[in-house]
Length: 425
Image (cartoon, rainbow, N blue to C red):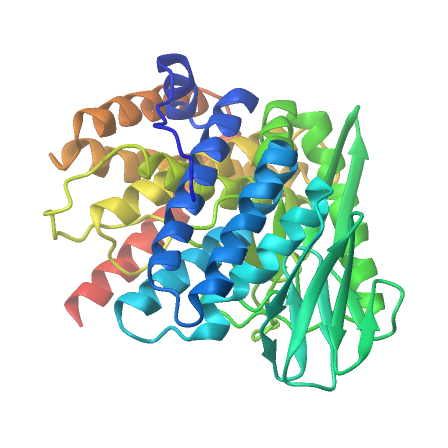
């Protein structure tokens, strides 16, 4: 079924990514590689189809028809971030004998959604989980039946179940809602997906359907965060425009702390609780997309020695990290430090941003030094570390008030002491 390509970053793209940013073209190259990865994972699932092979063959025909009719629309649907989450989760389940028809047949819905996007008519049986039909990337429909079909006709999607037809105008149809931003000539529209059945895996449970007032709070914060990025960090904003597609709201299990996390095989999506401020939202967007970028690079190259089992001090946490995890943290915190550096220009966040920048650049420097000295980097890893060192040294050369620099050093030392105490216990 699949037609994939061999993907390599150009030297210029790699060099730009190695400095911690990357730019639009590098992000688009990573997205293209992810689409091929999704197609390969789907091919593996088709080989282990847990049901009627005629149904499987019909799904393949629908996918091929959608791609032939509109390759761009097909790529947007099948290359979507939560397709990466679903395909990796279910492939792991297949390996352990734990995948059933409902899990694999999520592909049926994806195929019909791709057909609708491409203007191709199609229909397929789709799973019903606890009375809900998932329409991937589009929404969900509540049905009073254990069976249902998703139908695409003239680009319009409907759900047929127990003699009833539902569409986007129905009360029992819940759409995926979006966050939008428009500032400094840059527009962005992100899905805020609180419906997809495969949106979990972020070390905190996904939130259930957000009430409208809560959705409005998210939108207000996002608008302000996007303005900060578009005006103060246009290169980062361009990257996010090119590669970030979806946010998954997480349940707020601790009111004292905001949380965020990126799934290794889901490029362009991450989970988060609602950030406490526009500045924190802006930093979180950059932070987590850094993880997405590095994870996508890891699909194309090996950066660290997989046989290295040592654990290292990560200056942003008290528990020890393997070399691969430490490198992930360094790459993410280069973006964090750069964002706080830029946010110093906004009078609302200036003093706070100054301290956060001073601390984050020290964290990067300490963590990167451990990476450089580890002896566990591949040639590609060494090139990446060299690029990160140039970016880090540039930030270290930026003057900050002496009192701020001292407080940042003291904060880092307190973190190191907590790490040492944890090792001794």
